[in-house]
Image (cartoon, rainbow, N blue to C red):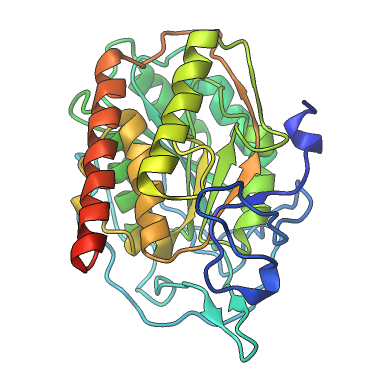
Length: 364
């Protein structure tokens, strides 16, 4: 397969009400081509400076009416209250970044021709959960800031015993684009992301990105995800669409990943090819609209849960091919318990959904 940077355009995962985007998705077939994505490498307008944030060294972000390389196509509508709570950060001067003028939802509306219209993305926050990633956190932060200079980074550290939090604090002291969320202990990937999402929403960020600390998600591909998000509610960096690939993975890991995505896609009746992918870019209003407070799953299952919730809520989800590279330093957090949890929960969701349809019940 060709490198992800030269791969074909993003693949669509759902297209329920956008007539201008081509053919409708087949729930059991391949995703269709997404035409919203442009060329990579577009840079964002510089976001204004803001107030404080969880780390003592860092400052709060600017809201930024502009987004990386895109112009607003429609005004925002219908304000919604962001979820409360942001984990257990160490806070000094943790004030909201605005008085609320730039925190209304910007979910896509439709023009007279039935075509979707999207507002500006706003400032990007890249959330990087860490537990014992002292060797990896500095290189990944540097690569993110080099690839998307106007993005901010939130390191959500679960009190790593190897000193990852201290390294992150040093990075925040050197660059005010870096923020640190110090959590009480190891609570899992899902809990760390949810805490990061809530903190980002409260501080006015328009885009929230999931990224691993170990380098498996290449920051150099982030501009393409952000470009695709101009015409979507959620963009997934996918290994299993044409142009996506993996590097240095054992066959056993590939089998688990491919099998888990296929299992989830069939049971939940969704068109997403890479349901377990952890490289994602959300618009803020997407996270506000999927019921984050009801999410209790972790690991593999957390990614499946969020993607399925987005589809059920009617958000427009597309997949962009990426190259996934196995970590070179540190230990993988994958375990048998994570895989077992995902298999059980997906089975439960799939059966429940089919029973609800048979009985004419509304999906929860």
